[in-house]
Length: 623
Ligand SMILES: *[C@@H]1O[C@H](CO)[C@@H](O)[C@H](O)[C@H]1NC(C)=O
Image 1 (tube, rainbow, N blue to C red):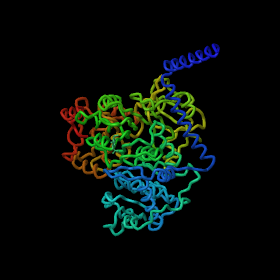
Image 2: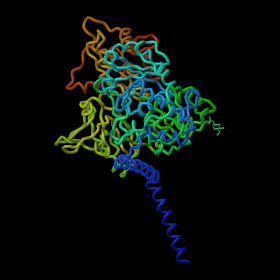
Image 3: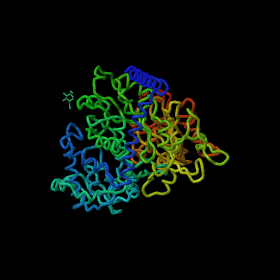
Image 4: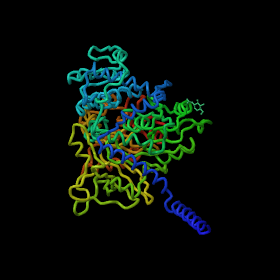
């Protein structure tokens, strides 16, 4: 007996001391382990479905949930509750219409131009039910880019939301010339060449279409095309396979959300965050989401209180807008326990938590098309993700030395890249392999190849170049530092410098244009700035430029600052000059070139004076 007791107490001692040791030396051990088990479980499930060719897509998950919890609210939109059954039945009706009236066939690609509303989901699922892939179009997009999007993914049909039919005015003729059929979510259409859908939906059956239409045996078949900003000017269509959509849909679950959660989705559905992680994640859990047409800082907390929201999706600027709202006594009265998103700055993060209470912020790092993702499941402020030796076994990524001035990775004498040390900043590369495939961009091998780096550490290897500079600290936390190359982020969107350069180059008085992003203290991302040379004999015309910019470019891509140069400074490379321009920023007291700033009120580019400069820094100037 006493021997037994002795054993028991020794065992207890061992357990306690291991626990203490772990807590002191590896404070994140248990949380890391639990998280990794989830990642591995999810991965194993995917591997298994690969072996058995028994692929359960996100759509099939939705159909199952609609059978399991038909009466549960799935989407709440503008106060109206749509249950799982509602969305299931309406997407069935649409599927019948797609087969019978629109004449779509399995394998077709269909473009969808719609703002956030439940019908976005019904059309998406309806198309998926008849085996079509869907290309989500950015609703900010302007005519020229829009036409290009059809070419990328080979879509011959466009479905447009009733509110966006007007956007077609300028391009309908071009679409019809290209043999693209246009269908609107209207009961009857004003345009003779635009077909109406809703009248047909009303008459269609709500029974499911044959499941064989959407059955798939391969995780690697494309299901969606999501447009991301391209470095060659026009948007690129990232190919989203079932594999990626299933991985993204597991995100909420991995962060510990359950079917009792109510998720607030204020981000646009045409981006992967809201569609793949948000809607996919809600379906995976069988939870409820509150969908917003547009984010509104003044409505946010009232909405959360009204619908008992427990989690929300964000981008960094959204949290800042919330912090900028006038303080209220009820600021901490809500049930929100976590946020999932990216781009949250440390200062905003701290302020957000001290103001609105203990909301765990889970940063997710990963691009739509990328093959790597980091998740900050610990919630440590200022970090986008967490790694450890096990994670490194699962995901082969590396940080390599980068020369900011030359804008290229540093190579050793054999032409290979060099890894950075712990804590040092480097370019994040992710190895392309069978377990981390890169599916590239639709319709362009060239663009796909451009995103890859070959012969990085040895002859024949291939890495996905994220274009992001990151650092990993001693504890394995990963921080985002900067973005390199030809894109920068502004208001949650990627802006391609070349797209802007091209657009500005079309203005008659522009001789040379060089676009880059400048940091504004206190704001996320970078604001677009163009250094330009004016054609001899012509004058800079702010009003004309403004007109051109607002008609040709989406709002987030409007260049905020213009710098007029006498001549482009001669440096050894074009890239080096950009580096110096970025460094010198937009301060009129240190730059002798004339500077202009975008003014939406006056519909003009006005001289950037010291007064304006200081009101920008104080956050009083609307950019
Ligand atoms: C929110 O929760 C409260 C208390 O738990 C409950 O009384 C209320 O009905 C809930 N509201 C909604 C919209 O579910």
